[in-house]
Image 1 (tube, rainbow, N blue to C red):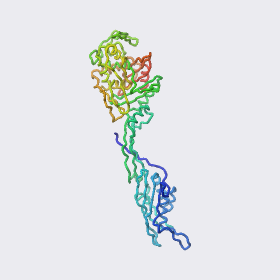
Image 2 (image 1 turned 180 degrees about the horizontal axis):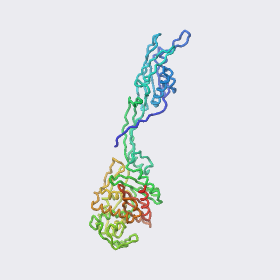
Image 3 (image 1 turned 90 degrees about the vertical axis):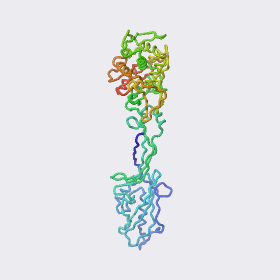
Image 4 (image 1 turned 135 degrees about the vertical axis):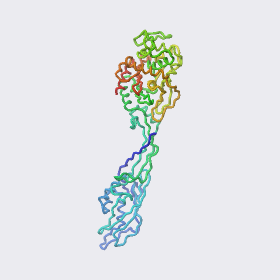
Length: 522
């Protein structure tokens, strides 16, 4: 969990003005009832007493017009300004004041002191209680309340005010950039899954009341927020936007998944509206020639071939009972790394036929394909590479047969080529995946040859149209999907980003290469 912070928000509005019992607002009690009738002078005019002035002052403090109370003081301008400031600061709180009983001053007195008990009932239902001292002075024939900010609170000074403010529990779902992750930033289905698992991160808001001045804020009372939690989703907003724009530009159903190899954090997961009824985490398709990454690693690990070994690459070949063809080319002999770059099906079929039944599934799992994790924030399925032999294994070796992979699974394959370690795909930081069926990292001796071979695919092989993109390496794939259609793939990496591009019913890998170029040239 990231450290919690507090944000203080001033609650605005107007001070409650009701002065009657039973209404949420200021409830004022009169002083001792013995002073319930004003005396009269010789002209039979009522004489205003100090207690009357004091009572009127505390009563008018809750009126809509701050000047009404201020006019009862000997400094109405200063009083009006200070009363208005506290009214604003305590706007959502209810004010109550009660004058204590007092003995009338002597007839010749010119000053008298009184006490009022003040209660503020705040939105949090907490109360702030204190007493204030009122000094009432005679000015000519009239009595005035001597103005001082302590009439509003004993600790107030000139220029300060009483303030109540809410303390928000600062929990939030954040994007990789540290900004709040809101709906629309990532696919709705993914957002709903994440928020459904995290629940309410905000926690319980707190509050505080205190004195605000030019020197700062002095807390008088309050309660700190509780339980706020910050969780960072690993999606990179810029990468996500680029991936979404790239797939949205295609008429066919398309998806892109990007992963950071060094951390296995998921950087982007995008699909367009045409790819419906599934998502890039779980939708599984024949991977086509992108499977040759796994086959090449298995063949090199078995000692059948190394990167520079000369291998045949006939245009067509009968392997077992299957007639295998390349995409309109053939070579009597060429280095294995070149056969990989040109995507020679006949070469891979011959090597696949020589592997033990479990060689491909075991190696695939070491690259994350067919492995299984419980990932917080998403349901995933990397794919399946079943044990096979004979004709089935021949077809599996170049990504047909009964091999299936999700775009997520193939992105893991590319990320593992880069990192050389067992992936730990993560969508929310601090919540690592739970491995359920995961293998050890790939054999180290196979990794650098694979990296070189995938780079050659881009420089001189089937993805050479992307050769202008610095540091790009990858593998193309065309996968027959039945009914005369074929899916297109491009799986690769650039720097510390690995990715898989999938285009449904594309006919070839060209649409995937186009989308990859748009994604990488953001």
